[in-house]
Every structure is written in structure tokens, then in C-alpha cells.
Image (cartoon, rainbow, N blue to C red; front, top):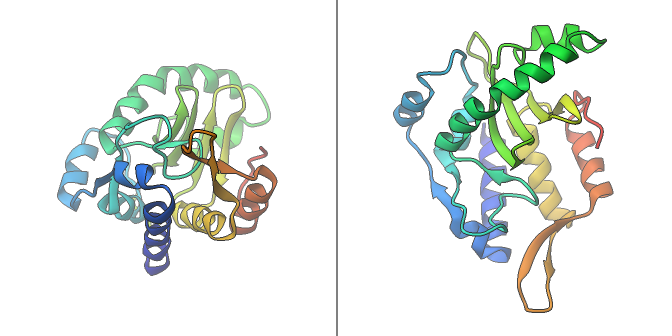
Length: 210
């Protein structure tokens, strides 16, 4: 967990120094009792990594379209994540019922996704989410899924620690960077090939293909 916190602190510091708008959008973290209160209605348990993430920060405010923890995806507050889960669950169920008929059925049936044991913690839009997979029993870590209705459900990161490690390294070596527009506005961009190389390096259990 020390490495996880170090990666969160590195990301926060990079944003503070290079993308202050995104840094200012980060909301204060919740205490553990608040997280438990919000999670009470969900029929699954989430790992300690999830608690540490939301004790660090409770997502980002939507100040404008550039307020991001990393390029593209917004960091959902726990309230927004729970609302989104309900909003997209029916769509996920329809997609999974069809997917169960093909070769991916066994993995989906036994992953917890089929029971909607997921929570979208990062979102690009209403059809593209990065979700943590909940479980019936408490665990230290859990896979991080890409849920994209046109592209399927895949393991994108091995766990939250490896995801934050990936993001921190991407910032450190310039795979994530600021692009300055002619008006002086700076926006987060990324080198797709380099990002994928880093993601594959730190997430050997991933079956995601960009």
C-alpha cells in the first residue's frame, strides 16, 4: 500500500505543477465510514485499494472538459460512480446476455460482471468506462475492467495499484504530457504507443487490446 500512496502523491504533484486546473478539480477524500455508508446498497465488496483511492480523493469536480486525473477519462466521485452503475447496468446486462452465447461466456459468467459486480470509477462517456470489479468476499486487490459497449469487457489493469503505477510512469517519462493550444490553454494528451507499452509492462494479466 505504500507504493500505491506514493504513486497517488506523484500524480497529484505532477498535476499541481503542470495541470493546475485538473489539480484544483480534485475533491477532498472521504473517511472510511463515509465510504462504507455510500457502499451499503451495493451487493458486493470492494478491495482495500478502492478505500485508499477514495480516502485520497473523492473524484474530480467537472470544472470543464479538461479536468482529468489522466488524459481522456474523468475520475468519478463515489456518488457519481454509484449513479452511473445504476444508469448503465441495464445496458451491460443486455450486452452480456448476448456475449454469453460466444466463447467469452465462461469468463464473464464467473467474473462477477454478469451480476453487475462492478463500479465505474473512471468514465470517458456513457458507453466507455473503467470499472473496478467487486467480489462476494473481501480482498486486497481486484481487476480493473474496460467496459466499452462496442468493444466488450476486458481486464485493462491487473489492479488499482498497477493502474496508478502505469499512470505515474506515463507522467514521469512523458507518455502523458501537456499540449499547449495557440491561445495558451494546456490540455492533457498522450502518446498512444508509449502508453500501451507501459500499460502492458505493469499489467501482465491484462487481456485488453487498444
